[in-house]
Length: 349
Image 1 (cartoon, helix red, strand yellow):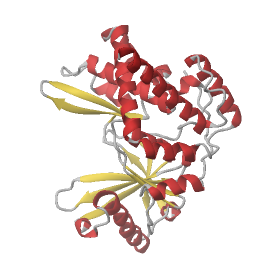
Image 2 (spheres, helix red, strand yellow; image 1 turned 135 degrees about the vertical axis):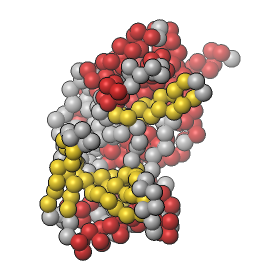
Image 3 (spheres, rainbow, N blue to C red; image 1 turned 45 degrees about the vertical axis):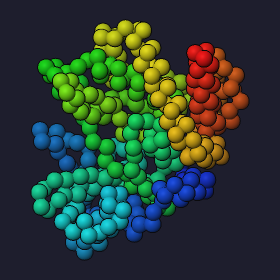
């Protein structure tokens, strides 16, 4: 199993990333900051429906403080969901504010409930970390998924990504009569490829969810990352390949059992081709994002030095040793993909 640094040091949002966020409307002025949610009196352990500790604590605030917090949280939610139109928020209220005990950045999870029908939604308030923001934006630009988030000063607001946690899915769905192992194995191969090309690390089964969509007589699966703290940080190549995490072994075994090596290579080629299409569609945002990343120090020098050597050997390319930081390594990864794609196209002409 790949080794992950025990505690990643958060990276402040630099001026270059801040400029990108403003240019692409990811920065919005809000009245509530992360530190405001720390003003709670007590916390209560939150248990799930089976009475198991969730490792989240529900925060209890004084009434006057909570009323102000609730008003500001609903304004933030309106920005995320309705472009700031507060009229559509009249029937909503904040039912619960939970604080995560085990997360690196101690995030808050906000549960918003509809008074009319008890439907609910979540979003998160976190400390802004440049690595995570880069991960969110890269996911938005280069994956099949769109990501809604906003940043203001040292606060990051993220939408909730719905789905069945990867570890829970293994317990509840693999033995279901409608389970399709081939489709899930195919999706894991593509997910593995995306993470590696984007240098998104720590994708063990607790850090991704599986979304299930009925599709005629079958079920379609999509694997979505939900944790982006390890974007372009670790120095070991295998950290960026979900296939090497012991928690993901059941997914790897499904692939080995149900799809051939030829099919696996086909799915890898399909995902690379799709990523090239996404790169071209998002050319200028991606160029600006990489320019900002190349001016940031997202990881220690020894991480960069080790990773560039491992990637150079893996790809048999001298493009990687020239990289001075993680941003340049990521750019080299994308350029290698584009060069390989162009070579394939030329061979078919």
